Image 1 (cartoon, rainbow over the protein chains, first blue to last red):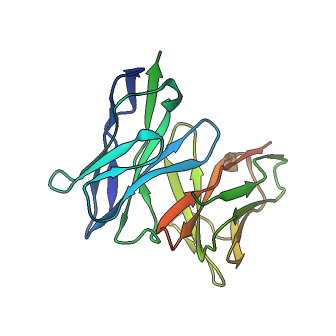
Image 2: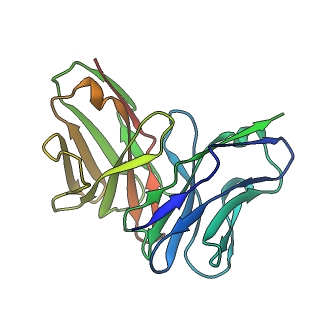
Length: 114
Length: 115
C-alpha cells in the first residue's frame, strides 16, 4: 500500500524568504508524485509533478520540487515566498500511473507573513 | 492547465432529500473521474472512482446505494447523495484524469450542508 507523509501541519515563513514544505512517500514501483495547492473553500490546483527524468521539477507560480529516490522525498520549495502563497499544500503519490487513485498526505498549511 | 468544473458550488438541503453534484471536464475528455470528500482541516478521502460507461468503484466503507455515481459521458460525472443526513455535510471534490497530460485535475468543490 502507498502512503504519503507531510510531517509539518504548518510552516511559517516571512515574505521574501525561501520556503520548504516537506513530503516523504512510500510506494511500490516507480512513483508518480504531485503537489497541489488549496485555497479556502476551493478545490485543489495542480502545481507540479514528477514522473521521470530530471529530479528537479519546476511548476506553477515559481514553485519547484526535488525528487530524492534514496530518501523517498519530494519536498516543495520556492526561493522567495509571497504572502499570496499562504494556502494548504498537499503532496500526493500514485504508483506508476496517474490514472490510479492518488494517495494524499495530510496537508501542510503555509503561512507567509509580511 | 485543464479545467474541471463542479455544480453547484454550495448547496443546503433538508434531511432526507437527495442532492446531485455535477463534475465536468471542460477542455478534455476524461474516461476516469474521482470523487473525494474533505472534512474541515483534513486531507482528501477518496470515495469512488468513476469510469465512463461502467459502474463506479467504491472505496471500503463508502455506501454505494447512498452515494450514487453516474459517468454517462466522457466529460460528465455526477454524484447523488441520497436521503441526505447532517453527517453527510462536507466538502465534496471531484477530479478528472487527463490521459494526455497523465495528471488529475480537480474541480473547485461543492460545500454540502444538510439541515
